[in-house]
Length: 269
Image (cartoon, rainbow, N blue to C red):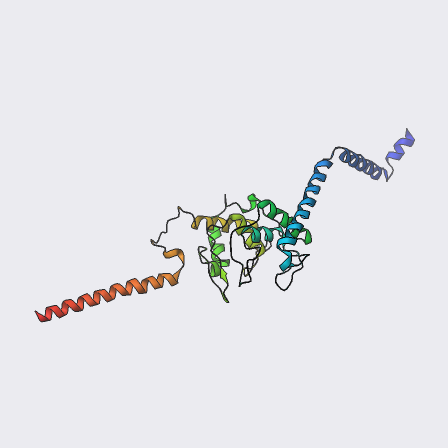
């Protein structure tokens, strides 16, 4: 008993007990861990990448290269991430119809399952932004007022203060944002497509993106009533000034003509 008690007080006794505990824990995990599920997920991901590679070779490789490395007709896709694919293909901008100043939004030609496969393949080429979850982009519970401040600071210079879009240089333009799904708006902020700068989470946290989406959802809602009356398309001071010149000045001219005619008639009589 004295010999056993002396061993328990040995400096390495605690280390030996810890190693035994870790060995037992590891053995139990190996026995009871859901290995089948993990293996099934890995197999499904591998199949998605293979199917995405086939779709890429047919519809994308001619511009972006057989390995996504880019060519003179299209940029490299290494490291752009799954979110960029989901946005570009999910809005119909890709595959590109023809080389222009920028890719317009058009009819989507791939199913969502095929888009997911393409995204899986591109994601396998290099780490990049992932496709956001509904919890990340849903405007529910977000602060639309805060989103309005953020939008006017970071986005209104190109997209107009309520997201109606606007012209840029050399035939480029900022597209209107009404009718764009929250997921695609979030992905655009993440990835910075075409002329748009990117706003990763290190620059603009996920909550701020949600706030901006909530603001756009509020101002573009069918139930939104313009507090100033006729909104003139929401295009800002240019259309308002034009309206003022055409109709305001027109009314003044009409009044001046009427006064002159009355004056002339009074003099004749």
